[in-house]
Image 1: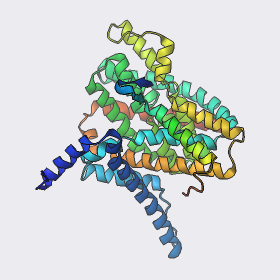
Image 2: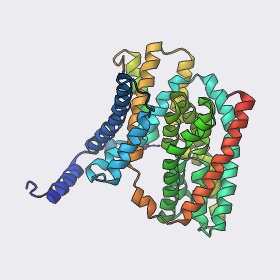
Image 3: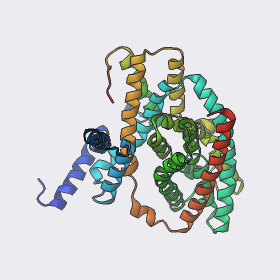
Image 4: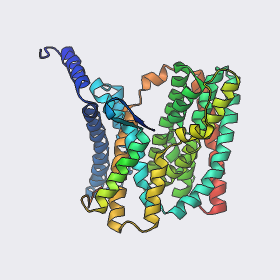
Length: 39
Length: 365
């Protein structure tokens, strides 16, 4: 759940945070900023 | 004033950590997850390199198990100093991020196929687990709310389901810790036992992954038990477990409704809002990335990059599984809930194994 809290900050659940982090990773990889990630 | 003794140093560092902004408090523990997880990966590679250079056939013990063992050793010997705890708790974030990114390795057709078989198995597993845990709990004289929590934990998704249900049915903290301890203790055992059974029965990656996803209750342990078998088994375990997680809202709603009828639960407003509130939202991210992969939105290199990022996220998760398991705490929880948990979980594992073996033969999994 995304909740607005004092001071205009937003508190976000771990589920949504994980989705946002994954979306950011997809974006960075799609535009080529992140590439050749080793394992 | 600067610290003078070791105790002063610890107190000083904890106080100093508390004064830091929230994001900065996460750094030490997250680094600890990375160090423990990476040590596991280096150990796996070092053993394999040693075997190759000395022409020895050594058993391949995956980094997953090393990361968990190293984490267990740290948490149960020196313990986790307070400064690391906030960061170690991020293991759940890494788990969910890893699952969302894992969507890139599933085409939607695979998700639908396994999802369909899984959903039928999940429905059977859910009903059997609830009936079995309730009967066992009553036979051992456990409190009704502890029985509810154990049933929810063993039928759906371990700790998350217990936490969700605790609020919904107004259960005591003590009952919730009992139920979580039983689920976590059994999850830890499953990491060692399930791969052995899978290998002994010669199960395919697909069938083994489905079994683990159905029988292991906590998502982190299910992911680890699957990955211990093989990379592919790990992916199928995550998919089956995710299908099970998606039912959390319905099961918790059912129990909340039951306890409201008994005048011992919290009143529920809109059922749709309740279901949405309990639904694991990261599943949506997994499906979106899977849909993008199906539509050909990623090149081969981009798929490899996203899959590798997912592996790094899981590496931190597996370290967290070991680091947050306190064996002494588990021993303190008393024997009765553990007996109910052990007997119930063994029965569920046996039942789901038979179900998966039948499904594997019928659907060529």
